[in-house]
Image (cartoon, rainbow, N blue to C red; front, side, top):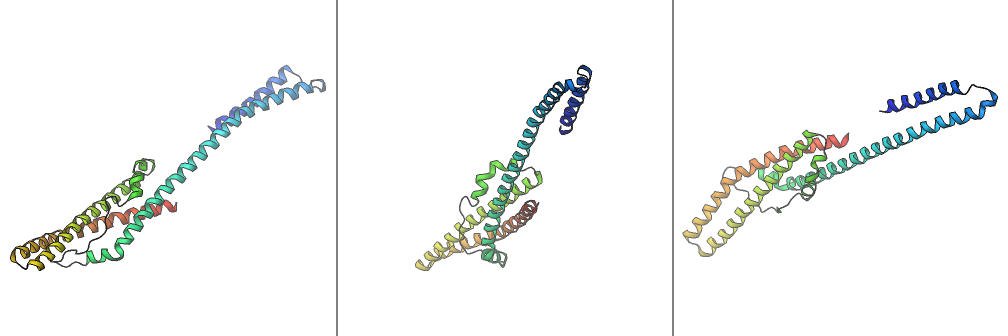
Length: 219
């Protein structure tokens, strides 16, 4: 398109000059006419070029603004995921991975219903990300992370029930409450393996996502 306008302007100037030579022979007496003709040609060329240049400038500015918005979105997602994962891994991740057969994860971990507010607020903007592979990694990474959070919330209920049953078993000191406690512990022990597996899957997907986000942000 740029070449088209350049050739159009050059062609207009050439045509105007040739046409002028045909109808206005060059001489000192015709100088004002020539000046007017050339000025008209230049004015027409400017009238063609300026709107084109303004349009191109607007397109470049819009593209730069869109790229900046995408970068900001990716940076926000990267910060959110990195902070949440780092916070959990600092202590709880090691404890979960260190579970032995017959153990259950006996800690109640704060896990809100909406643990990723930035992602929730920006999910409708994912279509603006031009790279389909990166979009997929974002969706998969957050899906795995949210699935693990839901698993942790369920484990929290198991631990809370065990604490309640422990209190009742100690208070009444009878077989009914002790058996009830043993059943609750067995459920938590069986669930521990699934919780650990969900954690490993989530961390694998999240690492891939964070690496992809860092790579994209570095470009």
